Image (cartoon, rainbow, N blue to C red; front, side):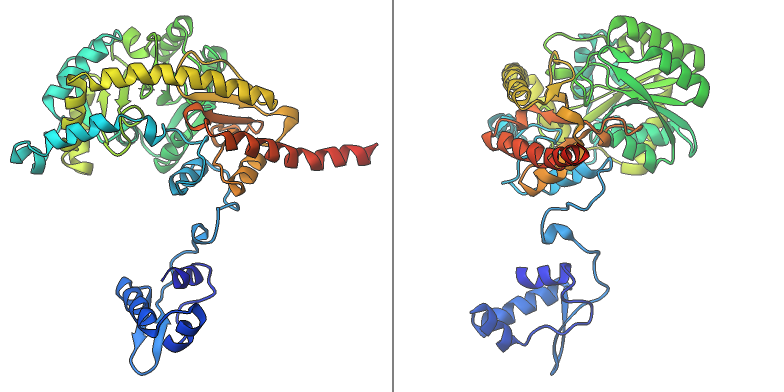
Length: 462
């Protein structure tokens, strides 16, 4: 079955093509004719092939789009905002993923999750089968309000709406606040999925250079005057991909500009729990007047347990709730119950305390190993999992990423994060995914292979 699927995917068997006879394929593959009969019958049940009585089996049509994933790494795909996500999510277990944006499964609280699932299995019927309320599980929203208060964000539970994830939160906000053609500001570089989400909303996206203390304020003011944006989407605590932290001075000036121009700010705070000491939050300074604050547990607890939230002004929450009903109806009630359970019993707190220490060690070790190869961090982040690093000698990160992919590692090249395409010499590393000794051998080979043609060119010029 796998052999036939691969031939169809590679187009060596095209729509309408006749498959080898049962006896011929059995002889070629050294299996019994009954094995081939069963394989053909199963493929026919899937719709991949069809039987013509008295004639044989034929490839069904229409043909699915060519799937290079069936025949090898997708080296030919343009390094666009979705390149890293596609490569990392489609990669097999044996592929290293230092370019992905999540923790390894072994770093997650598996034992606590299993205990919570067993407890949840004994919950009353409504918990297991009913839709959740439009705003989401009330006890969890109450707990989130208290947790946000610890970061200086005063918000009552009825101004918090649960979502399936941080990504769904941003998608809902874009649908709610934007019309096609509206301008939106993002950091340059920024999380690459912001680009993809805004493209899906048909927004006009403008980038503002990001510094170690936040967006370049002078360039931000210039972008406000030039583009008159409706929204600005950013990370303030632990910036993705740079690992930088917003300073209080920049936060103050940023909010002053936003107030003068009528700008709405979406503060994506999904990395909040990675911090050792809380950084300034725009939502805390602003009081949720024109800042909308979002969070999620996908990065810290489980990407399979989809649970995020939006904290916003009461007027906006009302409209967002209607939009959530129209697009998703009920929320993920089981996920919310699970998160609540882990927050209440102390499992999450203990997990995060250990995780922060583990990430700190991995940050130091990965930084040292990369520096030894000439790959230098832009800054030394205070917390989190990301290192934003400059490659030596003007080497193109996309070239390194393609070479590494062929060698079993998914990297995150800088221009996937940069709207202006000015980060070709950068890579983002996830330190939690960079503990495999093989990675540094892969990087060394890729750097050497990429540098060789440049050295030859210089010699010929001489």
